[in-house]
Figure (cartoon, one colour):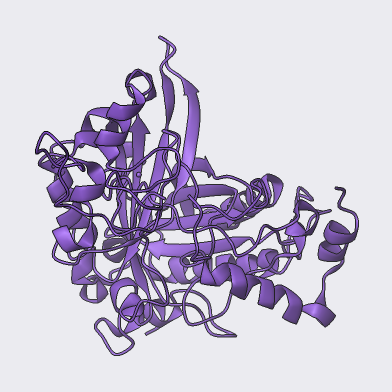
Length: 432
């Protein structure tokens, strides 16, 4: 949860991609697929850790979307950047890491990315998979499906492409709060799937897993969710499982340095990462039993914001600038010195910022009834050493929220720029 991108109530800054997706859906007009048409016409009517309160949600789409039209929303596969980075939060998500099979190398990886890209393009357009489609999403439209691909540190060893491995992909440092399960961390390849319909998301997950064939095997997989578009009376910044508004201060495309903070430069090194980004993925368990025992005032002191509307404890609204110098009658800071929102602010971290686009998760209960629930923290930046790492180091030294969360899995992946028409994702690396 990081306030720097902030946990966030009503947001006046709707996601730009939500708007872009809507335009794409309209532009697709004449090429509407049968499945998309049926899906529309037949419808009835946190780090946390790495970033902090910023469990990290982006703003809600502009304007509440009637549930009867959700199936028609379409994101575009081809473009300058891969989909699923700046798009509005989606209701359902799957994260999955693969390891290349023994004996598989660069040739097999290239063929796999070619298959995956072709399948992602079809499914994002609302079309069935080219081979052996399961019909899981037969009656639905695209439902804003996005599919995003990335490469882990080990991928470059497996494909003998070590010289092309970016320095920004060096392993993350250890943090004192880490309790990482290595079997659910890292991986050669990473896939992010998001959609506003659970069956559409699962359909994509199953299709891509089948496409892997003998070239790669699943290393780990995690499932997440967010509030469904249209579930609130008006657009709002999402809440996390602690009940906190989360995502208020995420970087916005209107910011003059947005692209600089988020994406690798078009003329940078390595060249194949042009317009790409680096993603840190963390499974952060929320110790909800302990958190929910805290009185409201203590919860708000831990975060530094009101729980009801996300406003700073110093007063105002969700988007009011936080006054870190304001004191109460007793002379103490209104926003405590160890409050999550204070620690994660960019101006308290040398300007370090990242775009947080997470999913909540719930994987049942432990034997004693403790919920296994929390945040699939996903943050994007041009360089994790200038984004995630400095913020997490500071959180590691004294974030009040640390007593109520536990980092249980971690991964860092290089996500190349979007594929041009006729290309597959990663082609400039694998065929360069």
